[in-house]
Length: 550
Image 1 (cartoon, rainbow, N blue to C red):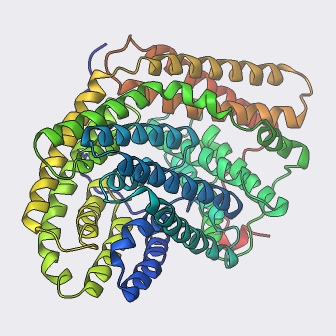
Image 2: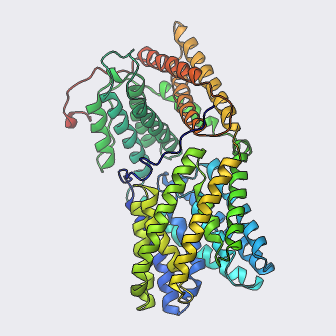
Image 3: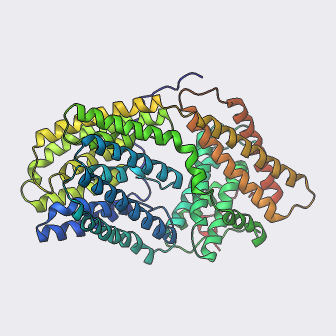
């Protein structure tokens, strides 16, 4: 098949900030501030490189319900300190930079596939790889490892508490926000719908975005505790799904009103519908099925693991060959590139290079300020932590403008460095890591992307057939019909994501594009028919927002 284009247009375009950008930004500042200020007061700021490993765990899991967040954050702290421990043991056992780069590359590959398989979400493997790779080039002995790991665990426990405290004020905040986002995008899609519900929709991207948001909201709600709240949110998500299946028969104004109420502290909206517990049993059945075992999810990621290991190792070796004293910067640059396909990896490479080059200029401007006193150094790093999380959701390169100077300043916690040399090495490592990492992405083919697309197509066709058989029955069980509709909607989301990932991959056989389009059109028609059979569609109304709630 023809190779995908490697675009430059729109790669650096700024998006709207995340709805909750301030949550990880404030959390990481609080999580980093306490350990750093304590170490500063004790005159041991050199140990901050170890506490940072635990503190940076505060960046994760802000989109998850608090019960799930507690579990995920605990695993993140365990994984972060585990990678740190492996790195510290390795550096205490060998002086070979080649061996250390190899260890770092293998750790980066393991972190990448585990984050992808568990869908950990941003910042995913990048922070894990940064901590473990940087630790490979810290001086230390085997006897110091337990103490340094204990510092990271202590800071990680503090970060866990920081991320869990907001649950005391808004215990259902994450699932409410996820549902509100799904309702908003579903309303936007319904607004664009043609008057004829059978007409092919002219805005497939808006439908894809809305369907992905609804699917993500279902995953969030299904991992939440509390039957009353969860069932109320499930009813709202069913309304969002109805808007996707039959947009011309939905009421965007009502969807937006519900979304506004969910974002605030108002009582949960109660849709005026006749959904009963039997119909909601479809969601309960899906919850009972659970996810596929981790081992099965890791299998399709083997090409990504090889890409990451090879790209990181070669980037580190190239940096060593050029005489750079910190080859882990090249290694981490390569680790940060790898996305779902080659085209997205190219986009990330451009963003990384632009952000890092701008970041070293920011570092050069900040160095005089940070050398006034160590307090200034700590405060500037905190400000950069906040800036990175505030900006990175708008575009990765913009967040990197803050991440790069912060990473450079962290090297000065132990002692001041030659800033000119730091800048030179960081620029070289960025260019080397991006170039070598991208070449590795091209060299290691991912032919499994085509296989995954075939499986996703089969899943959609089977789900569509199940729904069609139920529609043909004279009196299908409400729970079975709801479960079939939800299964078909989820299969469609997976098909679209898999098709887009495969379309951006190189060196593979031709994709069944016509079959994908046919399967999607047929499935959408079946979804609309299922909605009408269930009687879930709404006639558009002009009711005021304050009249929507009971």
